Image 1 (cartoon, one colour):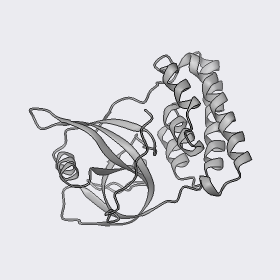
Image 2 (image 1 turned 30 degrees about the vertical axis):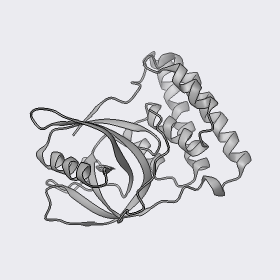
Image 3 (image 1 turned 45 degrees about the vertical axis):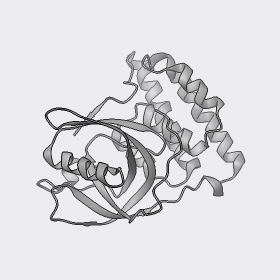
Image 4 (image 1 turned 180 degrees about the vertical axis):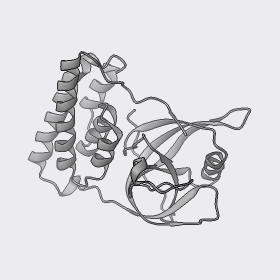
Length: 233
């Protein structure tokens, strides 16, 4: 799930294609598999492939908070992703690997004449460089320890890959985002984590979530799904 360092192109216009889903939250530094079959989203993918390869994952608000019709209300904080690989099937459907690149906030939607949605966004700053190193290292270790404690019940995890990541010089922010994405937390809590600008505070939030999940699994004798499943549009 970890990816090589990516960034937005210098020519980034501030306009992104929106891919709304009710149960998927993408984080910078991780890769999400997507299966695209709706005509409007096939058109979105085709435009992205021909242009900048960028698609922003946006979580749809719960039904009771959503607007009616084909344009449900979205959470403002999103993650811009870049198409790393794509395969088109004979019937026009696509399989994609979308790598998270940057967190962003929707300012306004634009180009309403299109089948799919677009928005003007502001990029959110990575706060890691401004946070005390001792706090970053402290929460990093706590989050890693808690995640490792949950691993025996996560039968789909490649432990060797995780160990390799931990031995690398990956930043605390990317490591925390990877663990957020991978720990089996409910989508609403993942969205909450995505919205937290501070890496330290985001780590503290997901640490509480993981501790709660661990207690729930221990009391029920069940396990959570890992890694997150292949997502359909």
